[in-house]
Image (cartoon, rainbow, N blue to C red):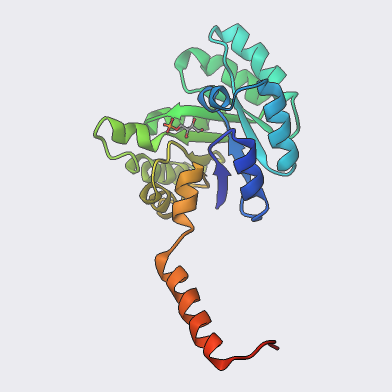
Length: 219
Ligand code: E4P
């Protein structure tokens, strides 16, 4: 399973990249707006931090022809760039065209099984079901992950599930259980998910017992 960072914060990405656990980054217009500066430079910095990682960059145009042109330009930013296109039916023809032309797509804003199926049929590399935004409207968001997994396995599609809109550790946990290929995780969630009070207490207890021996150097 791959873990992506759901942020455009360069310092946070640097900090987590050194762990060797991070396989990519998902940016979106909101993340890039929060980071500020020139988005092209920010993306270049992120790519240089994770040269072997997959970096998602979302289109910002709206008209399908402009989206197509922009998607091609975004794809040119680097070999490790995935272009995010929203799962809107107006874009289906250009998604098909981009896939046929070899552009690696991450279809974003996927909410339903049927939207997912459509994108699998078009051959998208990734679909990003948004878990947290379902929860926001009082619907169990993680359920769509298992439905998509069953559908992809059942029909033998090659599209990968990228669990997005992960808001807390439990979402991350369910993404793993549902067999998502990737979870894109905000830094706050990753910090919490990788911290355990019993691990911390255990280290302190072992250290306290070891100090009782009074040994200066070991081994
Ligand atoms: C990542 O690809 C998505 O844009 C992101 O996970 C959306 O998260 P949000 O629903 O918390 O804004």
